[in-house]
Image 1 (cartoon, rainbow, N blue to C red):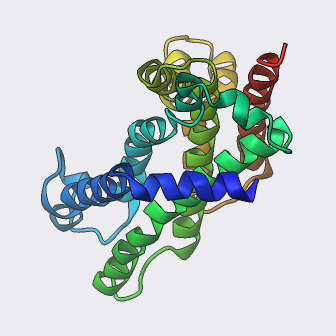
Image 2 (cartoon, rainbow, N blue to C red; image 1 turned 135 degrees about the vertical axis):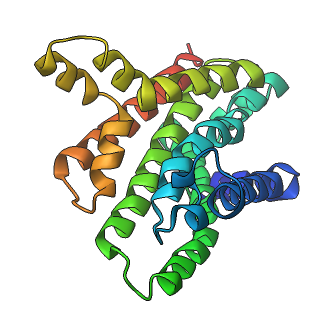
Length: 243
């Protein structure tokens, strides 16, 4: 499992994919937060408020694109190159193979978040230390769980096709559905009780709940169940190749 983890990380940084993803994520966030933004709320300098809320509002949409692009080759490339059978003959269970890839992408996700601490210290300096620590920690935890959910979806999309483009599109569709789709569907109906239930299936509801700084076990349970569901679906699909 460790060998697979190292292989994925090594590939990420040995190609242009790694630097491009990291630079694109940081550059886009920097431009929106400090230079250009479609509205004053998204720009820290224009809004007049020393807050990291614009970062945590923008980052999920960035991950919605970047994570499917990162994970699209996870299994699709193995299938296209005919090396998936070789991978399955290793003395590892299917779960260990999937977990190795999942943890590799999770580490890469964390690497994209670490440089954003610069924004935190900048905001703390501008606000003279008047920053909501609980909300900041909750928002980073929410981003980590959101990203992990997208990774599990990306792995499933990659294991069902040998085309990286199709994998990318499927992953984008599912990530968009789970992040924004359920909230959109919930707003269509007039029955508030049904709308509330539908909203609970969406990532966005739980992401913003955690971002308030109140860690609710219901939100954590949702994320762990969603991640577990797509890892299980990935495992079932991978096992089916043996038959």
